[in-house]
Length: 239
Image (cartoon, rainbow, N blue to C red; front, side, top):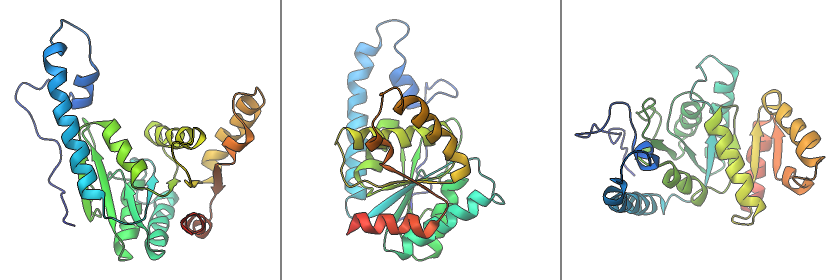
């Protein structure tokens, strides 16, 4: 595979400053211009699916690692994510991240320096537009939902590091897909006990206690600070 670090979003004539393709797709305000523009956008969406399927179809078994783009290099989470990427690569997995800085960069770095396959799936945003320097192979997507499909389709499991809204989104989507049996054999590891235990406590005391989720939903998650345990769980699921 070849690196595509230069395939990020490019300015388009007539594009509102600071807007993104997703934003324009989801904006239904104003007149009925969408009747004429949205059907043509389907072709761009189809092209992104085709390119993603084509380029990722032969990567082999892979694990996606999620986490904050805002994690500084001197933060303990950065070192932990780097160790996760290295451990997964040494276990024979390709490592997929969102291709951005912070925790994503650390996981890509660990995988690449361990001789593994380091993949970044970027997204068109008003910020974080370029892939990090440790992506061995990268794709940039215009549409979040296409990119999210690629994470799920080509991953055998998720390792979720401390992060913000995007990280939470990926976590709960994976849990929902597992709960509804849309995906099977999909281990989800939360790395960072201090960061995540409050959320899990709330889910137990509120959602579970009120009967809105089942214990089996919580059992989908493994909470740990142990990188070796996280890698071993992925290996067990592979076997």
